[in-house]
Image (cartoon, rainbow, N blue to C red; front, side, top):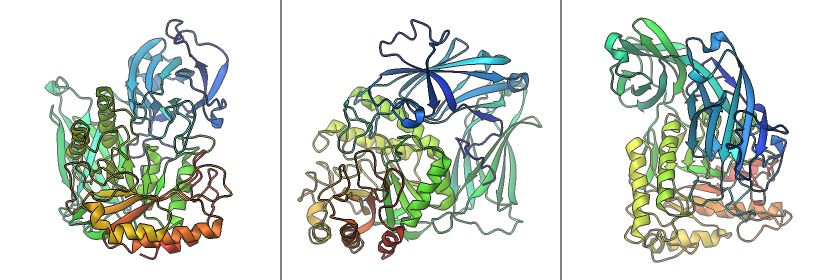
Length: 587
């Protein structure tokens, strides 16, 4: 896209004046929590260095200490010029820092954030000076089961499919320079049957700004270099919405929908004006597409969609949850396509947004899934809901995302089957998500014990295709009517029943090979030949099930002690991708 800048961390909202702060920082452990008392933000201790954004637990950080440290500190110098700070706001952005982050600039506390997965920012304009500046960051983490942690272990040792924790800064840190009055966020919704888009605009303007001056929002839409429409509308002091034509009526243009086969994307430039002076410019893109459900089928742009997905947890051997670089994200997406999948379930992680950019560009469907907590409490309800709202808003504009998955396998909901309080929270998250985004399906609890859900999903790691076929062909009515357990669970929580939704087996397989040391699901395959036989029997069994509208195989890569990937941690293929692709292509 025209907005694309390599390594730019926020590819759907691009400004050209920016600087990455990744690289070498000073670092300190603070196990006794004395850093604030000793004023590390004024006099940082000498000694350890760390390579940001890799956490201290990883090899790429330069430290590789997998033990638990609850408090860590970062520090670095930043040179700024008069041109950068005069007349501009300076915004310090964190794409991800786990879990409680406090930031000082030149000894001044500029802000704090709670959460590990959504981006956050601080306006540091009034704290920076011409010349050398000092940035200090404190991050507190814990093994608490109340905070969203996904697949990060909450014990001091890893086990099964829970891995080494991620502490501190784990995504890009960067600064950008913006006008004093600027665009904060734009929500872009396409109306494909009206050939229109709706823009919901957020700026930093306040009511006083409108007393003496007029402000306008502008947008320029183009496709393959052809400008289709240019608009400029007056803003008011309240939240602003603008519904505009995709193209002017005197321009010959057939709307190009986004799909895996044709991932068409439109360029769009957003502009903010004060009177006739343009004060802010943001470069972006969007896709026009519709995901819908009719009866028990899923449709993309009014064409029936059969989902062939693979589960990906987004871990790398030397960097854990942090992608080694942008190229590593592209390589994983290319591998997904080589294996013959049209979608990916990004499991228990809010991935680097560059990943979503390349899914948009390459046409890969995405299930966007939040990292779960593991203990149901008022605290976990509050912190999960707050961060989930941020995540949905942050990723809303990506056309590749077709489904929201807030909760997985009743994690954090130990009594979900019968506990009305826990069921109510699931339903509230479902409706809250739909209130923010009514254009995508929401799966309130992926795998089993469904309450209100647009799609019914099943996790079943039976390793024999004939047994899988028996359960979901001959015994499917027993499963749907809550008269048959699978994985020691029923499909619906008490008081809920099947209402004709699409059904997807969203986890299956997980097969490892006996020569591999580590953990996998069920009985291991004897060798590569036996693995292919198992994979084919399981996948073909699902493909032949008339009530099933898609599947998701576990998983793309090995992760630490879990060795059931189609690739190992180093991304070496265990199985020839053409073999997997040919099996997936049978439906």
